[in-house]
Amino acid sequence: RALPPSPVEPLPAITFHAPLVAAYPERNCHVEEIVSLGCHQGAILCAPNRISCRLSYCMIRSFLLDHCQIRLRACRPFDDCLATLASKMRILEMLRIAATEDARKHGGVPNKVFINRPAHAKSQHAAIVRYSNGRFLNAYHERLATQCNGVGTRHDASAYQHNGRDSDAVDGQAMPRRLLEIVR
Image (cartoon, rainbow, N blue to C red; front, side):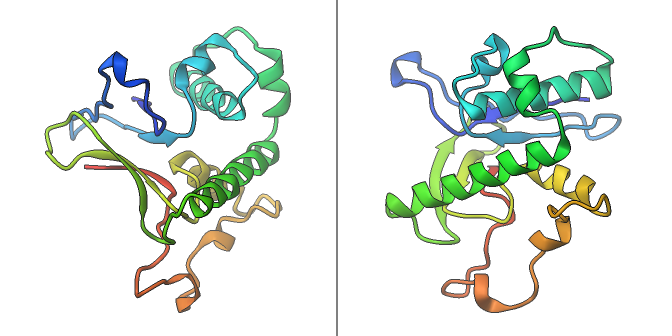
């Protein structure tokens, strides 16, 4: 199992860093590739001043506990605000709305790529992509929404499903499923 988080925000150019989109074995390997807002190092350092770092911490901690039986030392500011599935969903939805509004303010065109970070990969076209909008913030948001389905929360995954109407389409372009995505 692998959880390679990829931040959409670039490091300063002086670091000579581009994201790496790795190739994984096709058999006996479950990979959960997630693009996230913010910096993943902040999740490791337990720096609670950025909610995006809190979510990265939450994704990493959940993965290690659920799939590797590794328990991280508690980080109270992170644990307290992300204690329930409903609280995680509220924060993910808040970040999705804020990222959509940010793209709109900076000239982002609905249903189109807003940021395209070329990545090191087998494919010449691999990139970390941020669309101007999307039904989910990222794959983690989509997975949690699916888990909520049938749990009796108002974050039912079916609420995010495309209803077949053209209301989300702009110039024939359907709304992206995820606002943050890895393109191979």
